Image 1 (cartoon, one colour):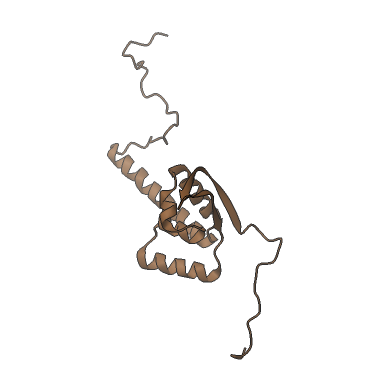
Image 2: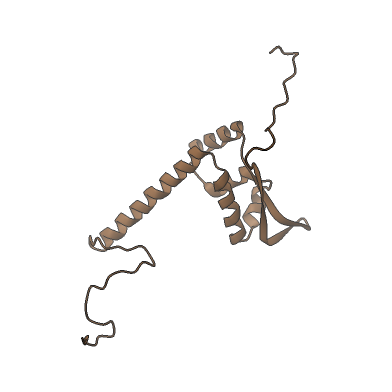
Length: 152
């Protein structure tokens, strides 16, 4: 392409997968007196993913700060969201993450859970029966919890 040639118009074809999603706010905000009832989350384009990845490589992964790249709001507005609204926006961003980043985040989460499980096991004296929270565990004694002897 020569310098005088104009670039062709490039846009996403109609009918493709969802690229934008409005996240309704349960706790709307007023921004400069104007109501904000939703935050729009969008998929990133290739150059934006490269910039995001460079930022992660330079400063490490800070997912809360990364969210702003996907939204139509500045960071100070995202910081002002109610915790439940912020969580909804974050979940939507996760849906729109590039597959590679999503997989990296999932791997990091799994490694963290494994480390925590190992630490809990070590602190419990190596006991292997560390049921997840909320899971029913089998009784280790036939003695009722009130201290009385069990009758059969």
